[in-house]
Length: 304
Image 1: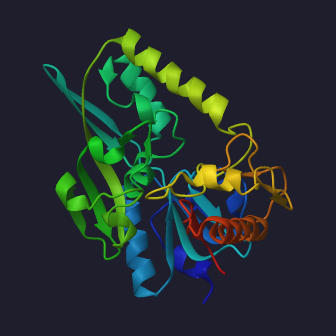
Image 2: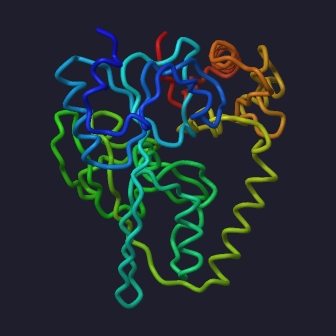
């Protein structure tokens, strides 16, 4: 049965459902084939209804946020792709401590700007990360020595059977670019962060410092999925790639950035095939030259 037949009887607005939707519109890499059925989720009730239909009919489910850490394959995504757009920002202040409850679809950058205006400190290091709160928690995103695990108090999530659960920080199994949500089938809906009061001048100065660093050191003028490779336990991955002579090396329009060797960029019309070929070549050369295995930080999703 066509996937559209399952969707016609849903209570969710049909305007939120897209068929054969190009995924390059939903990723910062600007790469990827089509999603068979993409649904924008801004209500938990809609999410539960779709999960119910999907699980009953054995439909594959893929979940995305802002697509800032993703490479979607050229063959695209089968089944249902859920783009989590749940928005909510509630701020509770108690003397110097501040607790903010945020919908999983809110963008980190937007939240950081609100914190700046309200003189709430703690998010400055992460203010340049172009992801959603949900995505940032899932991968334990980090920058400038701070990670999401340092800020998260609790997380609400729904499993694929539609059951809601709240997790404490200790239960989330945070690790380098990983969390419980990379291993278990839960969809993050809401995150509560523990922050503190600050001064607008200090918060702004820090945010500007990190923004300048990012502009100078990272190839933000090109589409990418951020840092492509994880750092090594005893080596700096970008340094090895550089020393291997791969800076600027390209396959098709996928290139190892000349600005930062840890980034693969899309110079224009790169395909997922180009990126993966470049990644595999880079892994091979680095291993041959330095006997070090490098791993992807970005996530590859879609049909192989």
